[in-house]
Length: 336
Ligand code: F7E
Image 1 (spheres, helix red, strand yellow):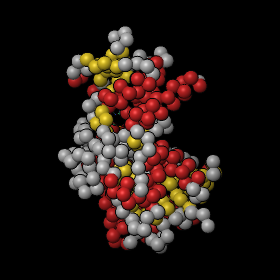
Image 2 (cartoon, helix red, strand yellow; image 1 turned 180 degrees about the horizontal axis):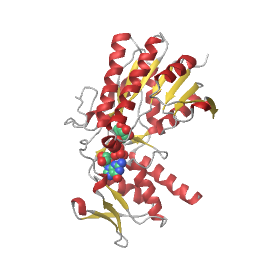
Image 3 (tube, helix red, strand yellow; image 1 turned 135 degrees about the vertical axis):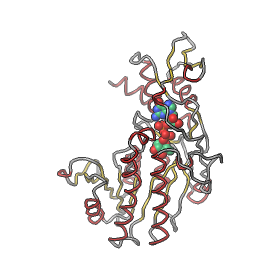
Image 4 (cartoon, helix red, strand yellow; image 1 turned 120 degrees about the vertical axis):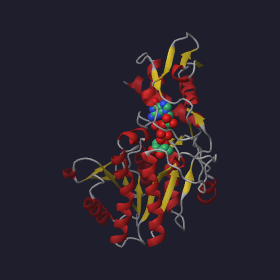
């Protein structure tokens, strides 16, 4: 008998990697994406697509009832922290209420013993943390509407596990990136700009806080951890991270090095610029529009628990990740 998985946010970065991973494991994969409900169930690359808006509870009931999944992965979210300050209510409705709805459906359809649930939680829960690196025991202090919405999602998952014995797990995922990361996240914005600047298609890269430090891993490694959590004897919550923090500034330096440009920094604060050492041209500038009303502290995760209990560890290093992404962006430009 093959296992059936249902993935929300199937079209996103993580949905793409996870569906590939599960198909290779022999799963029947169903995915929910936004779009035209008239198109109903479609099959694309062996994935059964269901077109639905996650705010539609009745449709969600129908999809779960029909597919009878063994595993549900809730990856759908308004996942951009900056956008969450501009659209706090939409962010909350999507991020906080979708896991509640799914858990409630598992319960009301009597699937508690059959269906295991994965919630894509986030290192952003530790926004104001003074403890570095952050562990599962580190107190949460979210610093954006995004993080606050994910805090509700985290606790509702724990609550349904305790109250109804549902196999529900939070993967507290720190930043995870890939060549298919959208450009409104800083990694892809930088790697794509480095490639475009190298090719003469762009003059400058405008960024916000260069000093922000994040723990960046490879999305392909992180989806494996999601799956591993649902294969254990007991449900639990795990931090998934590389344990190494890098600044946005370092990310810029690494990406430009991949296109043979050495960056040197001059000036301070809003006037800081990144110059091409070979000719003094300014390639990186600060635009305060990319600052957030409030920024999370240095986020870096301690994934010892996942390493020990799941046998998981990240394979791709920060350097390899930046190289992979920048090379892909160069190839995309040369292919077109
Ligand atoms: O920002 C700084 C920015 O937007 C990273 C999501 O997957 O990971 C992600 O959230 C850092 C921040 O991701 C620009 O201020 C500077 O400190 O790539 P990001 P994020 O906010 O860390 C967590 C774990 C999630 O859960 C989220 O869903 O880079 N930064 N200049 C910039 N960021 C952006 N986007 N654009 C800039 O120009």
